[in-house]
Amino acid sequence: MTRQTVVRTDLHTMLSHAVPVVEADWGEGQEEEAARYFSFGPRGEQDFFDAADNAAISRALASGDAAVCLPPKPFGTFEIRFGASATSSKVARPPKSGMLQVNLANQNSREVRKWD
Image 1 (cartoon, rainbow, N blue to C red):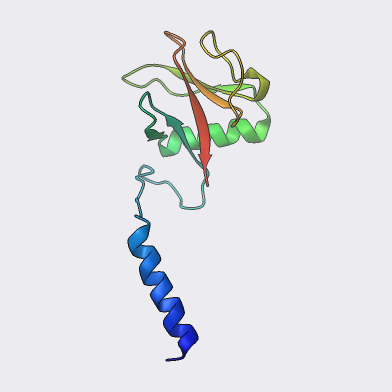
Image 2: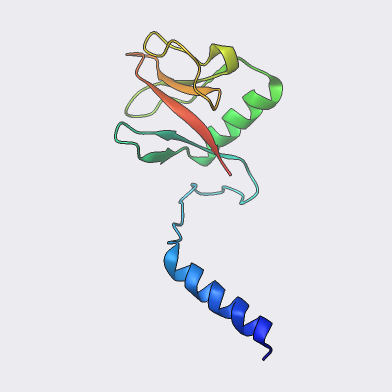
């Protein structure tokens, strides 16, 4: 084993212990290469969209749509708004990501980002 190999191995070991790896559950049937999106919850937590919602968001972005309505959930009906349309009665300016999730019943809004 060369000194370079030892240094790389030690660095890899140090980094693997320093940075926790979090596995995300993307939903059944979600391809690893497919775009993934999440919103920020009220306490800053990341709420990931399921595979069907991710696909709908990707299609809307690719088509240049101003918004896409997601299938109703038990906790509400949501729309993802893009670009200049990424506003609501509670969010006057689009977020940096250019994507906003809006609860259509009460206009509660969350920034949406793409998972890189």
